[in-house]
Length: 301
Image (cartoon, rainbow, N blue to C red):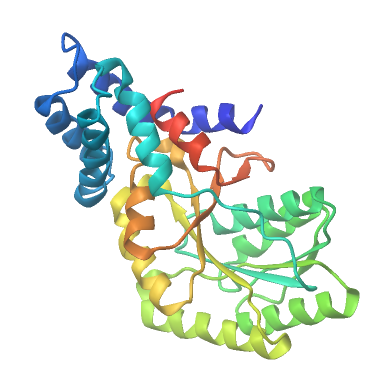
């Protein structure tokens, strides 16, 4: 199944919520008028785009309508074009030097560990060697889960006993990758947001220790967000973005929500690129983010 087909399945609920309502507001209206635009803004807000992004999309559509593109049959295409302009595509980050260290952060339950396993498999299939570090040492299940994913993908696995210092696990993983000439290091982290102050201090320590083992690392800090949380993910993004030095986003579980518009709201609020999107439960179900494919899957081809 290609990327677009996977995204279509993943964004089915969001697309249905948008397309059905858009079809409804243009039925019997051959032209896009002020009433259609007002209704469109409400539809976008209900899909969790947020007022600011909804307003920008409507303004973009309105501008094209005023230039003569006012056929109601064109509305989905105009929305899609507005979405593509708001959220640029990403590119796969290949290591400039070995190893390329990627730190995954986010709250428990967001899908960090599963996502790390998928990334390990993805990079291995690109012909790159991967070291996976079980830095969530406070959750035995996370260590066991990551070990299974690492074995499946062919990645090397670094762990420590339950309750060990996460920073030492990260240090060991980077050191091992340096010594063995590996290409990628993927580091899992804890996500106990209820202990926010301690968690952020712990993450800062992990980043410092990685930097000591390899100056300039981590090269990427990716925040994993559960798509089913919608706009509630904004508060998580704020906390991690400001305190953990996040450089990009990974969005998971979009198949479980009709509010996929929050992806655009987070990009607007934090100015961070969406790097990856999860498209299912299987090992291969993760893709580098492509704006046009995402927009087409959200509002239809």
